[in-house]
Image (cartoon, rainbow, N blue to C red):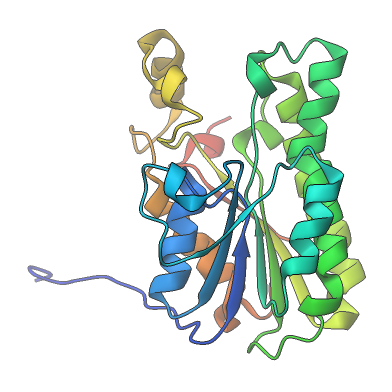
Length: 254
């Protein structure tokens, strides 16, 4: 019994307008691809001037250059969006420009990229989101992290920002509820991406993490995307202010 069974979930976002920041690579790209595959019109952001400068094929998306450390570029991005149903605040960075996050200037830049930019963009786009007729309401999905809950010693700024993402998610969920906007977050565990590639090359760094993870492996970007689509769908219409952890069981162990 069970032989040949296929377990799959299909989401439908036909005609929905979705913005995924940092959608040119990794988890952001997987999320953007999943929304596009579900019929949505997807806009992504990246730091390069054009989409063709990336190795990935981004031709199915509308591309906007936006450096999340630049307030004017964030404002320009918000002004370029005409309709919006789902905002995915995915863009993030550890150790900007290779800097030491124990340096106060690097720490502040890390906060700008990973929390302040998401708040600013969300506030700017709130009027458009409030006009959404998406079943279940408009959604803001923030990308948190295991660093929201556990100390990662070499990235104090990133950890502080991601902890703030969880609390911001709760607060905006309460504040935006009268506008028919739900606000949730997804906290991925260790996932293979450009950002984690340097870490994944060293067994001394990955082995302790995998030893604690019941599923005993690193996650893949396309294993995070379905959680985001679920939280944006009407299947989760009674969920807001929640952070969904997708970590292979890492946080289940004390």
